[in-house]
Every structure is written in C-alpha cells, then in structure tokens.
Length: 398
Image (tube, rainbow, N blue to C red; front, side):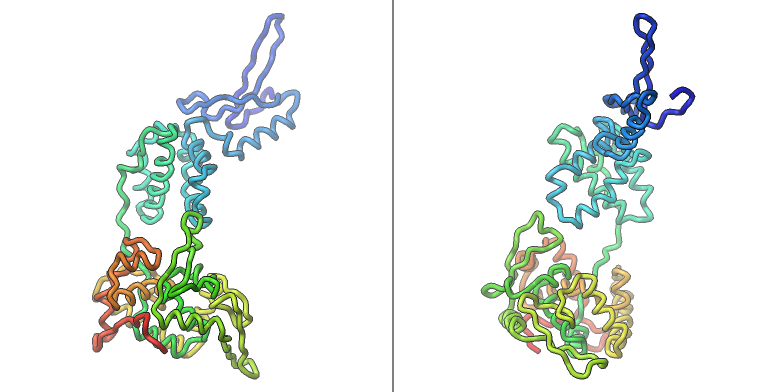
C-alpha cells in the first residue's frame, strides 16, 4: 500500500530480516499510541491480498466486539449488551437503553476512552451538555449507573462515576386522572368498545399494552391475572383483586357481543370474541396504537367527543393555573388513556385503600402510586369550582 493512506485503526509494520528480505505486516489496532491502546490483531496483507484486507477492515469497523480496545468504554458496553442482565429486560427497556449505549460507545464520544479514565467530572460535563433535555440527561445517568453497577463485581470497573452525579431537575409531569364527569361522559356517549376500555383501565390500573391482551382466560376468583408486557421478562403474573361488580362485568363481557353502529351501515353489527375483552368493529385484536387511534377518532370526529375535548381543555387549564400542575402536553388537549391508571388508583383510595395496599394489588411501585396520589385532594374540585368532583369507585354500576 505504498503511497496510500491507511484506514483508521490500521497499523503497518515493516520488518527487515536477515538476508535483507523485508516483510510488511498490517494490524487492527484502534487507539494506537494512547493509553487506550489494546491488543493488536493481525490483518490479511494489503499488498498481496487487498480484497481480503479491506473486507476484514470493514468487518472490524462494524463488528462491535472487536472494534474497541480491551478495557475501553466501548468494550464494556459491548459486554453488557451480550449479558443476561441486559437481555432480561423487556424489549422496550432494551430499546430505550440502546439509545444511551450507542452514545457511550461512539468512537467520537467515549467509545475508545478507558473505563478507568471516565471520572465523575467527565460524566457531569456530559450531563450538563444535555441540560436542555433533562429527561434524556437523567436517562443517560441511569443507564450508566446500571452498566457500571453490573461491571464492578465482574472486575470490569472499580468505581461507578455516575453515582456521584445528581439528576437534573425535571418537572413532575404525569398523565391526569379522569374526574367523574369525564368518566360519565365517555360511558354515556363513547363507542361501546371505548366504554369497555375505560372500565377495564379503571378497574385494573394497567397500561394499554396490557388491556388489549386481557381476556376471560385471565379471570380467576375475585380478580384477574396480569403479566405486564413492558416488564414481563423480569416479572411474573400477579393477581389484581376486583370489586364484585367489576368481576361480574368482566364475566358478562365474556358471554356478550359488542354491538357496533355506524351511519354507513344498514344496521348495527354484533361482534364477539371469546378470548378478548377489547376488540375492533371487525372483531380484530387491537394494537396499542390502533386503540389510541380509535379513541382519537371518537374525540375528533364525533360531536360528543369534540364537546368533551372543549370542556376538558377549560377544566385542565383551570386546574393547572390553580395547582400549578406540570402535565404531559397530550393531557392539555384531551383525557388520555394512560390517565385511566391514575383514575383507578384514586378510585381505590376513595374506598379506603392505602398506598401500600394499592401498590400490592395492581403491581405498581409505591413511588408510582404516590405519583398519582398527588392528585387526590385536588381532583375533588370541578372545573368551575361549583361542585365537588369525585372519582367513580370500582363498585359503581352503570
């Protein structure tokens, strides 16, 4: 390769042996000449076999296990990615972690930095550079703490440089629970599958990804079993106790079709599935996005849905002004499906359950339950301040 610039990460060595013969060797050695230099790896000869040389160089560029020097941050991230610790996380958690892990292993970032050289000051500097996106900054710190905590017992790191760096302050945002007037409005005017969605969300306090999978096979005794999709790789199923009226309602759904209507149809259509509580007018299982879209169409395309949105915007604006809520942007526009989790939590609190009981019953951390409980007293005042709003308890019947 005389006169040709070597690709990044490649080292060329020329050796003159006895008899005057000269031999040229090529090695893969990223980080050469720095304290991050690792073991060099012999490559095919670029002069005698250029095709094999370039193929191997390209392979090592894209192959993470051999791209980073031993003891580097990139090498550590690669090892963590291959670990059972990482693989035991849900697909969603792995995807979220990957955003930060790719940033860590970037060769232009920390990828070639020795683990021992990543000090708290370096981490703090990175956090401060992300101050305009505090949630992402805190996610970076959280993922870093997790990886280094995993690495220390294995001898891959000696200290956790993320431990001493504090999270940035983030507004205490959360999805707003539905007050009684919203619950009644949806039950009275929404499409029947959305009414089921509302009731199921309140009685179980679960995510939409779990609501769409629930069916009669999960019902047992006085409750329903749930193994959350988001955390299923590290959690077993738990039993959610239900009020008698709610348990009986689910049993009724297991035997009763949903009657769908549409102005384009000549007559109402009955649909029934024995394996699911929630399904579409075509009898198909909903995806999370599909159910959100269905709910969004009702809010946007029907007179009742638009009226609910208008009233909600007025009500939530008044609540934000009075109590200085920090809310998710979607909650400023309409009651969200995710808000049903908080609705169910407050409903259980109103009938006498404490935080620990609620957390145990619905499989949620005490911290997350308390996150929703902050709405408890404030949700008892209506939008116009003229009447007390209470959340419908689990025992309420239609």
